Length: 178
Image (cartoon, rainbow, N blue to C red; front, side, top):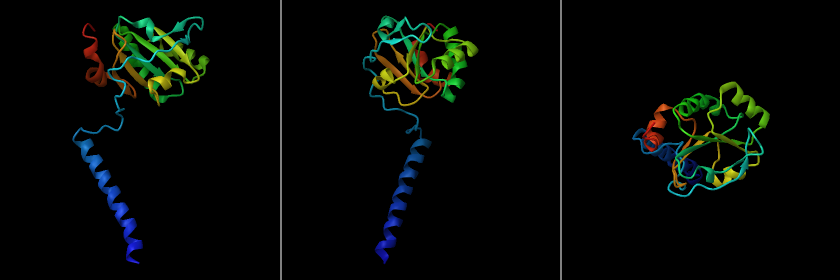
């Protein structure tokens, strides 16, 4: 009888201990639940060639941006955080930060309408309705932003909406002239 009742108690205590450890690491700044393992940081940006959202005869590819530092922003109109982030992307674009959009699994009419309503911060927008590119980039949610240097190497990655604090912490040092 004791063994049958002890097992759930042991499992409960183990899970409580793990939760306590995770919360103490979060409090100490050592664990961030939104952090994504940086297995792509320091590696060449995966290549893709996709049609443009704004002009489907235009091809969008990371190879077009070799020689400059730029951002790739994965977004979709179905993503509430993408709507919230959009005004900050406009501010970055106004400061001269090159941002390439990767519109993911979206209705093109909805995406074009969003850009018309809120403004277009992107120098180009690739259209990826079937997740061809996002799989190679390791994206599993939107918004997600990558910083790619002039040599085509991924230098930073953020899952979630960009904001001024995150910009300063993770991206701004790569754009010293801005």
